[in-house]
Image 1 (cartoon, one colour):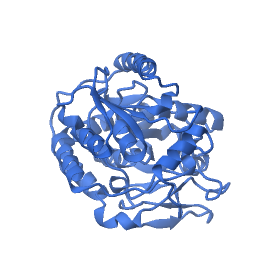
Image 2: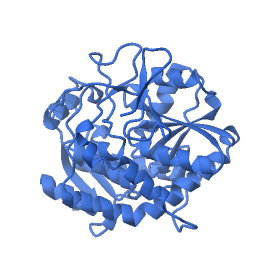
Image 3: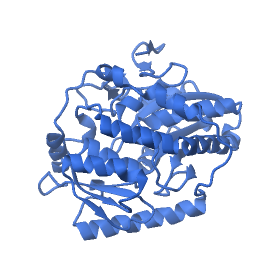
Image 4: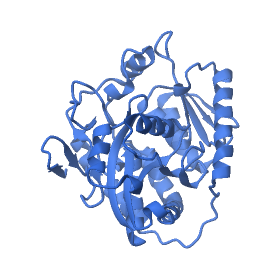
Length: 369
């Protein structure tokens, strides 16, 4: 693990298992005791604990799942490389980021995308600085991390980066928390795939498998999801994370980046993205959520996880009640069918609009969800 002290001597940054030149991860590595998944879910839904206060242990997937990951990588690496390069060109075309860009990827799903985007922008001749910071639904973006970045860079050059939009919760959290902080930072979010229609810039509106979205820490620099717990995080600290040294032998973070970087691509037949298409996608997303809440008797929208990556993570990290797929024969969702079978979770085929997959979290917390 690369760990480097800031000049203030109070906070630390590191690069996880990435090369130091690829990213500065503004998180505080800490020892964090694991909470069993079902216990964590019940505490979250009952309102006794916020999800960001706890972590469950991550396991290295079995060989069958890793085979499905490798198949997804082989199938979609060319498309992802095209989308990354397209997004880089779109960022370079902006006046604010034509010569210099400060990428702030949202840990942790945004981190590998930020690394790829940073490399692509550098190939275009843009001066790039890449940081990865914590953002937590209901708690906001890490203000100490943002102040650290502002001490070193002009706010005009900042672009926030994530892999995809699910139902737009993180976009709204970014906008709300930056408005409260009043640091003069625009909540400009760039993603690869924007099926929710809430990003400010995207390569596509299509919900497709971004291979890094199928795995957790072993493709995101060996860092856990970020944690904000007053027992661990002090007033001047960055949000915390667990560095998963025990999974070092299974780490694919650099291998994933190298696999995408090695692709040579000249064209794509992908679905386009535009502000008009995004607006239509956003309306369709809200209509779908309302329909699912009514048909499935769900009163808390946070229990609904639309989009392949979010739906996959819900099976891996939460307690799923049901998986809904647009097409059971779609190659893009075979890993989800496998995970659902392994966990005994029912799978249903149903029209879900822009999305290929959706997972509903099981209700475990009594009256309050």
